[in-house]
Amino acid sequence: MRLFNTRKPRRFRRVSIYTDEAQERLKKLVDEVKREQGDTPKSDAPYDSDKFRGTFINYTPRAQKYKENGSKFGWPIVIALIFALLILWRFLLTGIR
Image (tube, rainbow, N blue to C red; front, top):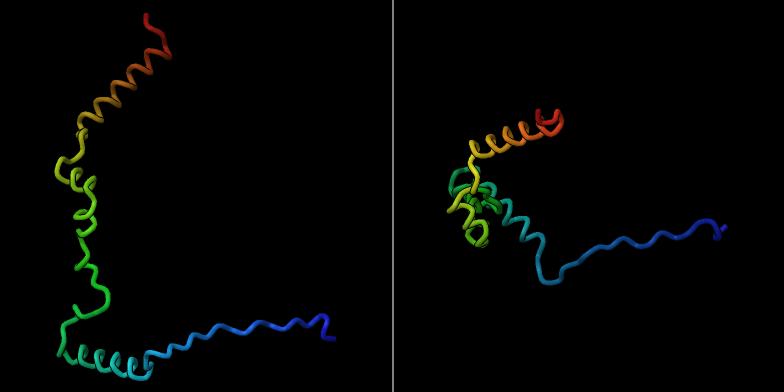
């Protein structure tokens, strides 16, 4: 019954014609062994988070201004405003006598 058994599509298999996978694996293995022996520093790793720390601020002017100026409201001002709003709310709910 060919009607109910549909054929599955072929899986995608990328074949790169310009690189030698065996040579890349060998180079990766050699680098790993050198790193384990201590011949090369660990900073040669593909991703080092310390290297990228703080680079976002260098490219965004808004973040640079915020870092230089800081926030406009300090915590004491925010707490005082909240306290004043609570007192105003109390007087509005109970009525001024």
